[in-house]
Image (cartoon, rainbow over all chains, first blue to last red; front, side, top):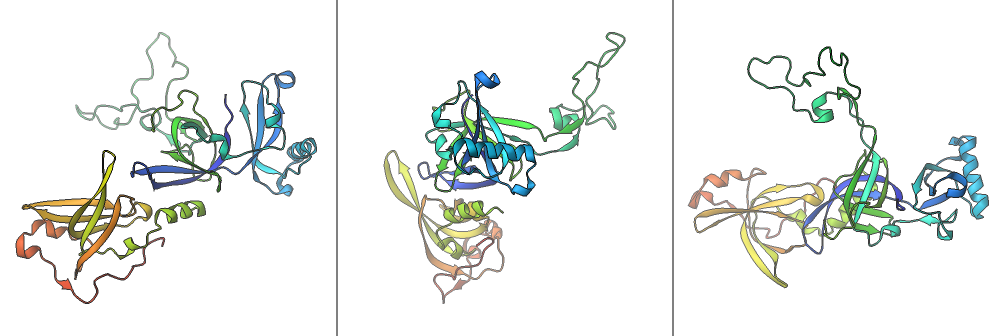
Length: 225
Length: 128
């Protein structure tokens, strides 16, 4: 797993690509510098990662165990690290080195030169939904006398064998509000001055939601998009 | 809307000129065209029959009749491909979408001209 950066989804708009002169639909992600809060090493924790924090939070809103993490990080780094709203981990393939010392900051410059990214966020909650919306079922035939069955899922199993509905059967229920990763989105522009990422296309979650942006795992991006 | 988005949209909409475009204007749109590596400018002359006003994605529809065939082109007004727009005439129109011109031919397809002002005043638009 590669190192990424945390940010908030600001929303979507359109910009013009100076090169192709075409309009590009972009999602703007505001990624303020992420502070490294803790190094997680294979020796101590059994895996390698770094813990990063972003977004200021009032000290009075922190509970004591969480506040302790920030005090510890401040002491370890000799810098003042104020309380932050969001803390996440990025898994690494090997133990974090000195360049990822506690108190250092990750900025959008991290993604400079990266063409494709994976974006992870919490999708918008859709509430209780039927199987057509939730699992893309086709619904039932509209003709031949069908009534009150158009959006149903059809049969949910067989008869005496096995005599029960199989576990994991796709049925209506809560949809959304879960972690979703969209892979291989084009990173259109990195604005280091304002800490912004311009990502072509849509990104999971609502405006203001926390997302993590990492270099794409599966592709490196030969094409522009 | 988020302040950051407003800022980005404002950068796209740096040119103030599109605020002067009106329905009924006879205009020459100078469009930059890339042919291989060479760039040239093509002029599309016609009447603005519609404006779609939506921040950075605003467009105008320009209609002309070319060899008896009506041709309409939609231009994103903030696009870098638009070199400039010249006014040749302004008309007195009483609606915001001049789609009725599509059904008219010849003399009926003319619009009454406004003579006093060659370039209209900028108009206030949403989010500007």
